[in-house]
Image (tube, rainbow, N blue to C red):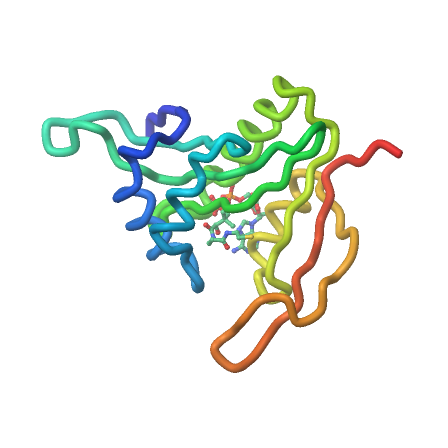
Length: 156
Ligand SMILES: CC(C)(COP(=O)(O)OP(=O)(O)OC[C@H]1O[C@@H](n2cnc3c(N)ncnc32)[C@H](O)[C@@H]1OP(=O)(O)O)[C@@H](O)C(=O)NCCC(=O)NCCS
């Protein structure tokens, strides 16, 4: 599959929402997705090439991250269920870390549901390590679950 990287724009919101709803157990709302275009955020996405049926191509995955001084938190990353386990998550993470380097970011953080073993495996494969646990941080259908806080590289 030939894929193109680019930043997301507000015109992509409908495609983001469709993918978000497919990929996540607790998808972001349209309002939260729209906030990804605020000044402190940056994004990246992977698209299949344009065709006559899909003139913009099809969104296969994206991430949303913020930048505060020299720190970044990866706020969201997802890959279309039909395209998972084909290396796209790793490509998005590599792209994200490259954009961080370009922005002189030296501290990289993320939070992930304790039950989300697949995402944690991706982050570990990208050299993230567990930093701490926030207890009862995320809502679930039955109550709450812990968040695992992970860091890529932190300079003391
Ligand atoms: C997490 C997610 C982005 C991974 O994307 P992906 O394209 O499937 O990941 P990749 O194919 O690049 O996987 C790279 C490596 O991560 C690990 N990995 C990824 N998904 C995994 C899973 N479900 N189980 C175990 N390991 C997994 C593996 O080590 C994998 O390498 P391998 O396939 O050679 O074994 C994707 O599963 C997803 O969108 N999940 C739903 C949304 C989500 O949970 N986002 C994270 C919120 S914090």
